[in-house]
Length: 112
View 1 (cartoon, helix red, strand yellow):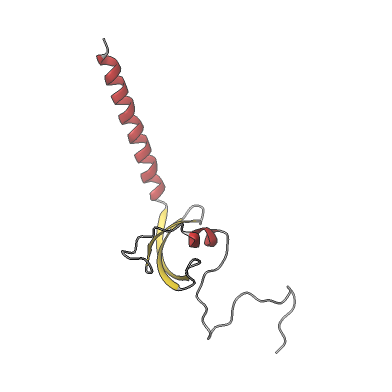
View 2 (spheres, helix red, strand yellow):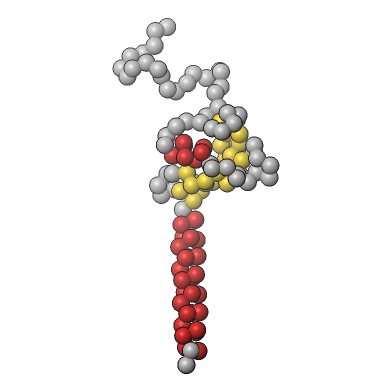
């Protein structure tokens, strides 16, 4: 009598696992990776990261690899991803280039 209940629960669990894995696979199809150099918000040092970005929304999903950490696998809170999604630039400062962000109010240009 309980055999059909066990079979039904096993089939339901298998179907649920299939649905979850299919949705996860479909979501990852829209991800792209790019290697970037940025300043780690925790350490303040330049690092080379492999960022995973969702192509549909344009938001960064995670830092899959980081040159600062042993083994490359980030175990941090990934503050860099959070800040990048807020629109905060983490590009390393290059003294040879002028910063894109001006400190002058809009409509004014800095005096030479």
